Length: 190
Image (tube, rainbow, N blue to C red):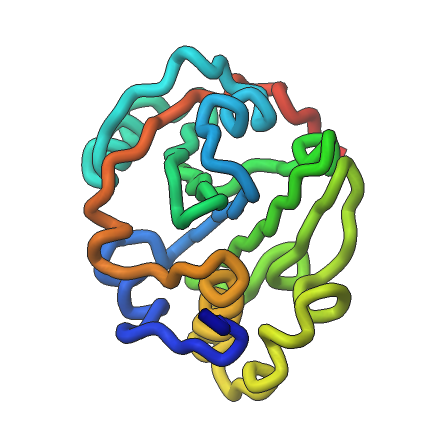
């Protein structure tokens, strides 16, 4: 199936808002279904994942504000997703070593801005640039124009869905994933 022009059945922005992920949303899509491998790449203990739904992940994040908590699970065939539960975490190029592709996106809706220039990607241990600039133009051709912050976010999430073959939907939010703790200092500040 050609996903280069596909559109979601529901507004990606509205879904984030409905599931309390819109104020600060930090996500990474990784080209593997091996969740424990991803946890290790993000410097969490791969064996420490707590299977839970999104509501439980939020509750556990509220109770543990010492470290970063990341909810990781499969997204679509060949892809997983990691969602930070408490704002954002710093992703370093090294997380994509050994041939992995990581698409990273975050925004702060309360400030009306996207972080790190919107959506970026890393491949094989290197920062490759901004999505749409290199390698993914065919997915972004009809998404260039937006007039508001909400439309910008919508476009980025449509782009992620086109690349990975799955948009955010209610089943995606209802899924069980594993919650991992990334210890403070695991990713030192610049």
